[in-house]
Amino acid sequence: MTTSDTQAPPEKGLARAAQALARATEKWFPDAYIFALVGVIVVAVAAFANGSSPQNVVDAFGNGFWDLTAFTLQMAMVVLTGYVVATSPPVARLITRLALMPNSPSSAVSFVALLSCSVSFLNWGLSLVFSGLLARAIARRDDLRVDYRALGAAAFMGLGAVWALGMSSSAAQLQATAASLPPTLLSVTGVLDFGKTIFTWQSLLTCLIITVITVVIAHLSAPKGAAIKTAESMEVDLDDTIKAPAPRTRPGEWLEYSRILPLLAGAMTLGWLVSQLLTLPVLSVVSSLNGYLLVFLMLGLVLHGTPRRFLDAVTRAVPATAGILVQFPLYASMAAILTKAEGRGGVTISEHLANFFTDIGSGGGFAVVIAVYTVILGLFVPSGGGKWLVEAPYVMQSATDVQMNLGWTVQIYNVAEALPNLSNPFFMLPLLAVLGLRARDLIGFTFLQFIFHFPVVLLLVWLLGMTFEFVPPVIPGQ
Figure 1: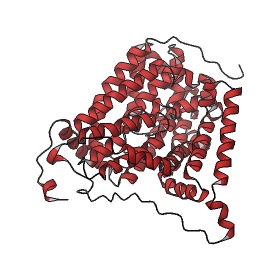
Figure 2: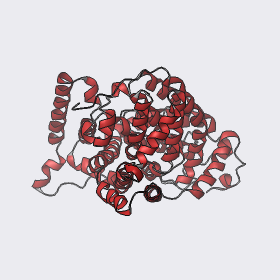
Figure 3: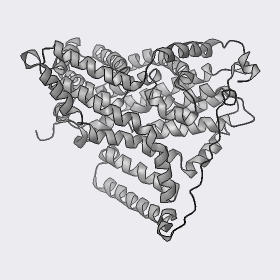
Figure 4: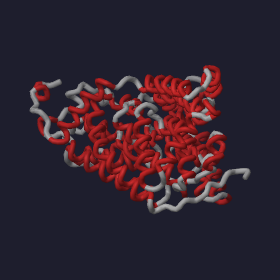
């Protein structure tokens, strides 16, 4: 750290508040895996208190542990495909051009926040890596001195603000994919395509409002003048040069360095996509999680040009999926205990919770309470898809009972689910690896966003919820 940075005067306004929050939140937050373990224990204790026998609880825990195997792989692939696309040479060139556009420190931070939110609508994994690389590219500029912490926090805003309102929303993708829905949830909600969730005008308006607020706060909270901490002063290596693959040495490696196979695979994927769009409803095609992942994976292969470059990018991406792979089985066990460990009178915790939310009544009160509950639970289960499977059985049953629109109930969950990401550093991990920073460097800025987002989200779910009508679910096979 340089002398000028060490002796910098205290920051003022929102930037000062951000750093005060950073010191407090980083001190008290353990690793996200600890939250998942604690969550399992808490749910088990609650089941015992509900009258479940130890055998019922441990059977639900063990038998449900692998219930989310397919969905776990799908969510890991969201991260992997986003990383692979973001680190491809064409996207790298785009990032270099975009990094030259901002002309002031504050505009640079708000620019990163805007692009982070925009890209996140397509793929939150892509947003994390793309925005992180953009922040690094801006930080390398010699003609612009920008606070690297604020840039990093802005790069996280796609996941911290609007990701769950976009096309890679775990809950919306899950609800649109019958094969991925647990039978207990499918029997309550049926299949809800994106036309009932992501692409409603209410959801799109919510996404726009949250994005605007995010960009404005990012702009106003960016440190200025002597308060700026650059990547250089924080001793961060900004060299993003990717080592070229070693030259081939054997005839058998020829295809690894050839563009023929990626182009053929890309052509087949394009042909499949066109066929799907011509034979199926458009919304059912774009709502397909497996199809979505296929397109992004093959896009990454084509953009990298050769199988060798693609496989090298996959190798770099795999560590970012570790948290998902080890935590989602715990979420599956939590959901199983909630829905299958019967207590007194044969009633599960899930049924008790459904009755509780039903008693709240319909309308704005139901929407606000569900949003607040989602935020609180998200602090302990920092996963959109995993938490949805814990929460959905009783929340959606309650929504049906009080005749709240089921598609909007998914979106209430989605807009509220993003909020805990602003204070829980679990999903920052892939971005932190790109930035070369620690969670404590960013979380003050992101928690400041949370303070502003929270009341706005509650107001939006209440007001917009009144514009929907209840539509009875269509249950397959009934």
